[in-house]
Image (tube, rainbow, N blue to C red; front, side):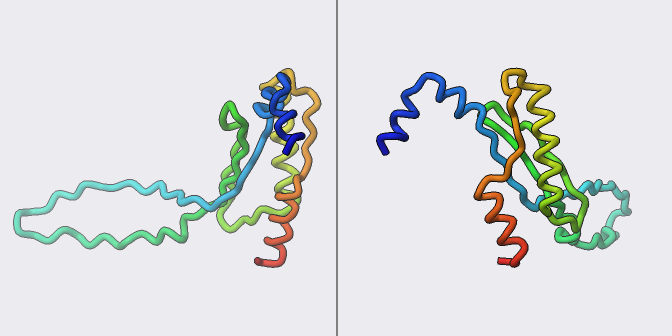
Length: 127
């Protein structure tokens, strides 16, 4: 506990916390349906409109952000799962974007955290 408190008291620690990048992937509903107006005569029934199947429009969305806001996001194609190669590709793209947009972070290296490794292990074992 003392070490954590001493780290928070250092003036450069604020920059460290602001530069911390985190990410998450989640399934999102993407439905680009449009509604159409239909003219009907008085007393006529409106045409039946089937209820949309929301499960068929779910896509994986991967987001990366820091304290200042969103850094990168990618909407994957339907049915795609996030594998180690997908994750590595996103980390490399994120590192390149971060180098371009934040000049002071020149030593950005993509790496997998323990949480990401455990998440990958859970997915592979379908936990």
